[in-house]
Length: 295
Image (cartoon, rainbow, N blue to C red; front, top):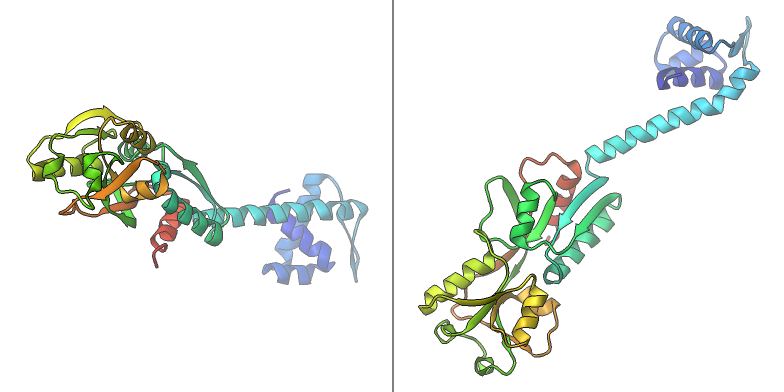
């Protein structure tokens, strides 16, 4: 018995009158009578006793009421699940982010989703640096990613969730640590610890800009796997590092200090990025929630 026939059977079983059941189903009585006879033929059993003045359920018909009702309810539940998914109210989104340096933004976004779209599941993927994470996004391994980029490819769209400042991290005992802010020129002879770069990587581009302003080519001595490791290497005296204000606020390192560069190297935007052509309705809902974070 399919759902359509189950609804017809239940209407007659609950009304015990073919005319009232037909009106409830918004169909004529003869097609309803034919449908009930078709169900009885399919099942090989009589479901209703039809008298001149009343209709009653047979024992087989009575036994069929609850299974038919369960079938209809399951069908309605499935329909509602599909509609909620189409509206983006439920579903799954894989969200990449670098780690502790964007913890505050990730926490705010997750909280927003839990409050406003509790059936939407975020599959959080940490340790996704901006450039490698962007490659995974383009390859379809992620639905969205939080990161910082100076340039994004045309097939990627984004929205700004936060704005940060660039800082130089240096050991607390370094001679330049006594300065409240740093000009580019005194940094000319310093070694640098960097993160993996790329054509759109913010730190790579801004370190190059710092060197251009100071008249030097940055001397890179180490490449760290993430911001926490980068600061540990600075703490150990391996070199200085250009980093974000979000890193200084999220990753405690006791013997590292942070100083702004003047003139500024420009603000850094923390963005949610996604593939422009991605049809996932749950992603569209996440984007709308993310865009409302700063409202």
